[in-house]
Image (cartoon, rainbow, N blue to C red; front, side, top):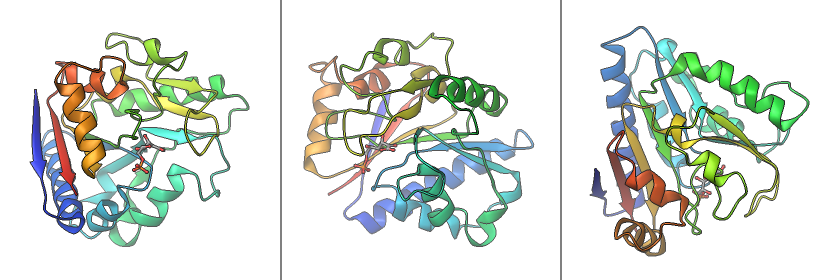
Length: 231
Ligand code: 6PG
C-alpha cells in the first residue's frame, strides 16, 4: 500500500506536497465541518508550508497540529509549532487553528495525556505529513528507543507519548504521536529528499529493515502511504 511520486527538484516537490495536502483538506471538508492536518517539523517541509499557505482554502475550518514536538518554550526556534506559525499560519491561512502538542503541563507524561485529550476529537486527520530522519525515525519515534514498541503498536491505545531522550539533534525531550494516531488519517504522506533517504525507504520496503521505525509505517495496512521525493 505504497506509491512513489518523484519530483525533479525541491520546488516542484514543495508544490506537489502543498497541492496534495490541500486536496485532502477539500475532500474532508466535503464530508464534515472541520478538517485537521498533522504536520512534521524538521527542515524539509518548510517550503511546502510556504506554498500551502498561499492556496485558497476555507482556512477557518482547518485545524493544524504536529506529528511531534520538542520540549522547549513555544517561542524557541526549535519549536515545531513555531515552524507552523512562521511558515504556514500566515496571510489567510492564519485563520486556521493551531492545536499544539505542548500545552501547559509541567511534565512530559502529563503533557502527552493532555495532548491526547485534545487530539482525539480531531480524528481522523484529513492528512498526516511525515518526514524521516537518516536513521529511519519518523515523528519522534527513534530506532532502539525504549518507547518504540508502544509507539509503533498499530492497535495501541495511546495517541501521544513522552520521549524523554531524543536520539538525534536537537537533543531535547519530545512528544510524539504514535503509529495508531499517525494512521488515523485519510491520507498519509511521507516527504523525503536526497538519495540516502530514498535508499533507506527502498530498503525498508524490501523488508530488510524491520528495526527502522519508518518500516512500521510502510508495512501497516490501515492507510495507503504516498512517498513524495526529490533529489
Ligand atoms: C522533528 C520531526 C522529525 C523530522 C525528521 C526529518 O521535529 O525533528 O518532525 O521527525 O521529520 O527528523 O527532519 P529533516 O526534514 O530536518 O531531515
